[in-house]
Length: 634
Image (cartoon, rainbow, N blue to C red; front, side, top):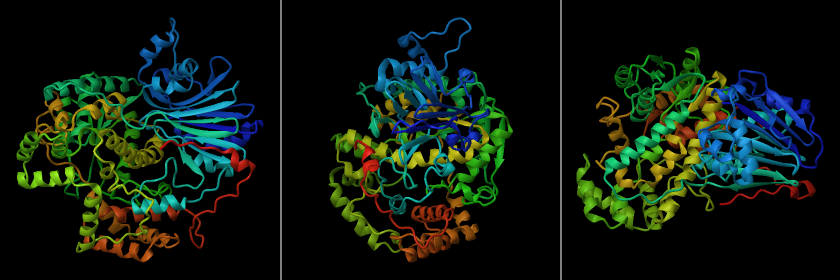
């Protein structure tokens, strides 16, 4: 993925190119050619190019196509032909129209609404020289990063937070409120990050900087569903297959060698199968850890690779337990949200680079969009009792009567009562995990947030998307910064194609599990292109062993992290130390709070050790402070 930079002066003073060059040089590793900077009066734009499509080879950004609008861009358009027809922008003989040209033309045609006409993974910055306006936007699913910060009269927009620290633009300081919410597993404030003073543009948002103020507009906050006609399950399967094939076709437009993360699971196997069906044989990369029970799927992966005729590379992760100091440097702890699978991401990315791969495919997104909500509960809410009973009987494990009763409890008992009963059960458990942060009455907690949304499918979908952005967004950013961009790789995930996501959000939940298994819609599609052993799988790879092993082996890193949390006001350090030590000893299944504590503490160790970390006082209201105006729709 490429990198971008924009610096704008709200007072209209000229921006010196050399003064902002360190902020672009900080991400020079993201491209395979020299960074380019352009300045024009109160704005400077920068670009680091990693061309992963044939057209991107011709992109020289920042660029203008009419003298008024300047653009810098990190992305891939998947609807180039549709835009060419609407914008009358077809190339002549021997001409190449780049994705950035289409985006600029879309902005000229539709103004602020141009975001509704772009399909793909992208982040864009456009400067209107006449209006003296900077417009920054991201695609709905938000798989490209975009951060911004203000210092005095200037606002900088960047691909990575490190750019905003370069040349001392902003101080690298922890966001105290973010840290406490993270440790409590609570929802974060919109657009905030773990760094004080740095904001992140989320998927489906537009940041506009104009007339001395900045505003954020949300143009997409959940999949736009449509009512699908009642039909046989296999008809849904066929439409899914067609949409997914189109998503793959768009993502296979590349000038680089293609690879796929092939675990042998449902998701990555289908990605590999459809790529092969369309004439592209990606190099299959399979990670395994021979010393674990659940992280060695070589048998399944080999079955898929042999069936599809793919060349395969095995990546031994024997020293790749979570927190592995053999794989991860301390600098990789640049966020509290450090993924348990971090070592495997780094090893796989390094292996891909060693084998000349430039574009990688993964099965991300299938869990979120194909698993579906509890189907029996959904049927009961619609008062389809006969269908609910049939589904309960079809389940392979447990009593159908007990399963139906539990589903009815969740479907009909108000959330407030269910949550009260849940809290009582947790208090009466033999080994509950003591909270590390005092509960805050104004916070929403991710464990209960979806259940508090009432019966509305629209509201439930919005809440699902809020959680998706919080949990998946941090993972996407970390992998981009520390696995893919250092190895000049781009990750493409066809399950996160907007057309596929919105279709699957429209499919009734029972259809996704119409045979009583999770992801039945995907399994039925796989019977046509893969050996039956793959769609018939009930097991899947687990990182639990590597997680426990890492916490035990990396004692020095773990202890330093726990000690660092002692500096944070509002954290019960005694509870943290007791619970982390108990988890390492007992290896009980409630690992999430302890993992959050260790990774948050690991992040804090990268800061100079002040006496404590406390909330920053709000600056006194003054002329410069009042100029900043952020509007974030809820």
